Length: 188
Ligand code: ADP
Image (cartoon, rainbow, N blue to C red; front, side):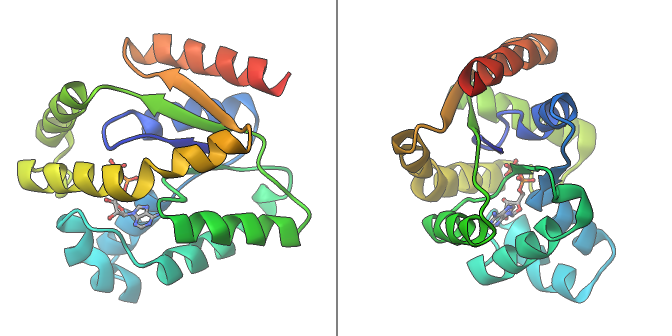
């Protein structure tokens, strides 16, 4: 499965619940990148400025990381990707990668939240968590990049009959319930 949504839509929060419900690992490319920055790995040093500016990490770097992670044992009976794919190139990569292994996606959850609410949530998170990419300029840039590069991918998954749209406003618990019901109904 995949979980998609604009910055601030609640992907990280809800991916944990979804992964737990289906007993699969939740894999967040953003978390992997942030861990690399924290540990100042070679990769982390390379991508730090890019992420802090709200730009995407290159497709080849991101795809290699995802391929490595999906090869791990805990992904053998399924996985949930959070924040990947984000470009059309990554979509094609994932389609090819999975079909080579005779695997495929079961559902693509899209968390839908209106833009004003997204910005409010990110500014609030900036105060509480201090993520260095949660400042106003970077937030604006991340929204633009999402709208330009990532939102169009939803059409691809809609055409494949995989898209499960979930209204992302309400309490964390409300959204969780709504999402789990929608995914169960889709898979049935
Ligand atoms: P958000 O959805 O709130 O922006 P993420 O944790 O998913 O947060 O991603 C944080 C940053 O990591 C992105 O702004 C981007 O720079 C980088 N990133 C994450 N996933 C990808 C990806 N699939 N391709 C390119 N860059 C990515």
